[in-house]
Length: 349
Image 1 (cartoon, rainbow, N blue to C red):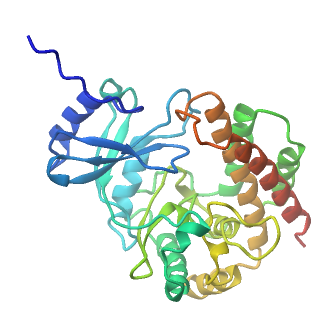
Image 2: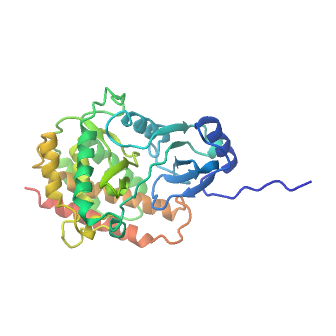
Image 3: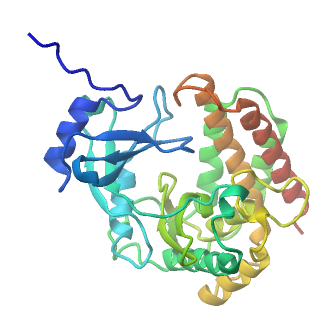
């Protein structure tokens, strides 16, 4: 008797049952499949799936090991992408979701593969011609404005979350996440949380808030200088649209020492100033951005908490192998973001 065929092991994918599910639920999916972990995933694990004949898909699942309550909800993320796909905002096609944990040990969903480049470093920015960097940046802010113009009820997301009190809820939520994830005490985190709560802005309107909007979470068509698809919707909710605008400021180099991020392409040069993006967004939406400094501070603080959570998951093995991962960078990055948030809050009028 011939020995049973042993399929290659892929951390996070139980190949045989997942392959069977794909063939039974995703149109055009034919085994055998190869699964490739897409580099850069530091929260949900994202795999490029290639089937017989070269058909490509993308599969998303939660990180390995313990995850925080309410985080990494695959069905929710799939629902959001399916809803947004009915608008002018470019997203990958939502193809299917599996909530049966017997298949792969955790829920997952599948979306269509979209060609494009994730501009998540100054080095990656070199793939975008300098002549197209302003155009791509303008399209990035235009897509955000279009997202914020979506009627949440019309696309079926009116019950996605509470509509009012967004920043207050976020401050409470991420303060709780900090307590659950922290690996040490950082007084700046607690001080910023207090200052944010003391100076809560009035929320003007409600929109789909992406929660992690930047070049690094988009696929860019570098030949056309346009956004091909917006990715990573796991933090999406309903709320204050200015939070997304402020968050983009964290990932936009303004020339100041200490503000350049390794996963931000804009230090490569040739990109417009953040103030130019604010002006374009304000003209397109009619929103008052005079208080955007608060939202930049809030975004730095929230990102510090998220960074600590990723650091903690790596330490506990929930993100797979640590080989080649600079954990010191996460630790120091959390501290730097907390101090940047504190400085920003202290500079508010």
